[in-house]
Length: 377
Image 1 (cartoon, rainbow, N blue to C red):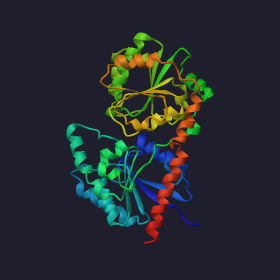
Image 2 (cartoon, helix red, strand yellow):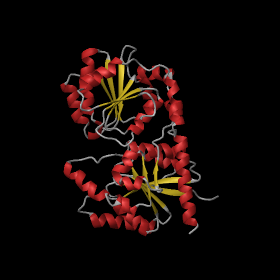
Image 3 (tube, rainbow, N blue to C red):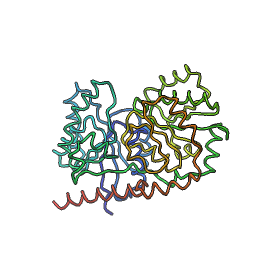
């Protein structure tokens, strides 16, 4: 029996971020007798998905984190990797900051290179963003293929010229609609587990506690909601470097009893049924998987105008300006009633091409086409 082709994915780590979750969703759905995913990460800390990757048959390799001062060490670590691991024909890079380095090395060792954009901005201070911009710019001249979650994300990282080329492709952030289609039974169970009653208006948010997710503004929105309706509760799913800062703000605003901090969870497909509305005031995004999941679940979504319009798949999305006050956001959220017939919206996600089975099939076909071209050389 022929061994599966092995695709090498590159990340900083395999925690529950948007890009990592998207790839894991695909990994679960591909035919792993034909295609296997392996991963290079840049952290020695165990990732949230590490155990599952091993169970699915994947291998995780750890290379040193790039710090600038270890430039030569970083280059040599990649060279050593390819000298030892000659089984790879395709490298799929999701980590932007050093992609120009590792994709260049991969090409010298004969691999077909893919650069994948998942965002529309870089994190960090002004100086850090400038440095990342310089590092990322050469990617457009190096990669063989260019993927993105949206045209906004593709244009930001690769430039307008690339998104009009034949080697550019949008890979939808697909979700398993069978798990996220609304269920009244799951709603009852979810709210019971969270000690929420029918009087509560539950605002949900799923995302890492990092600058782009704008949690501070989210707390301000909750504060304004509570002035109108004391039954409003905010459920935050995720963790990250700003966790302590956000916890301190919740305490300062005397909102401890109105915020449920659930941390990192692996049961999002169950929790989300218990939400009434989804609030996502991000400073910037590529195309968030969580907003696709929320729409599949039939949740009314209030999102910032900084998020690409490509995320608007259903009539559930309402875009609001971050220049508007938290009070305006609160009034918009509270003035609309809960969505009826939430179960019907999963069909819209499927028809739009965002079902994970469809996305996994498209990506698998792409990999096979590339491998066939390589074998025919």
